[in-house]
Image (cartoon, rainbow, N blue to C red):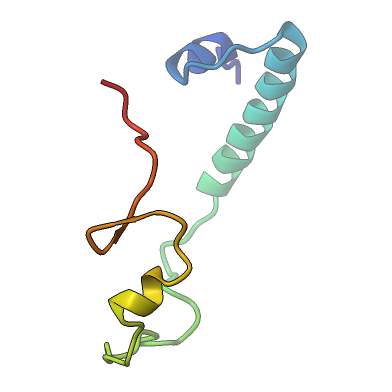
Length: 93
């Protein structure tokens, strides 16, 4: 299967060297050929498997626990202002 790697790279805003384009073209073709081969497998008698671990719920209940006070949290801060951490501006005007 012929893949236009230049077009894909343009859509992804990637600049690729010619040898990279050739390498990725071969890799992508190989992947798509494998997927095409998988599509030929008859799975009509196989039940869908949404997950394979058997776990039903791996999350825990939210629990509140004691935390640092504002003074403790700011105790080692180099710069503070009105009870908050003071940091340099990261947004340009």
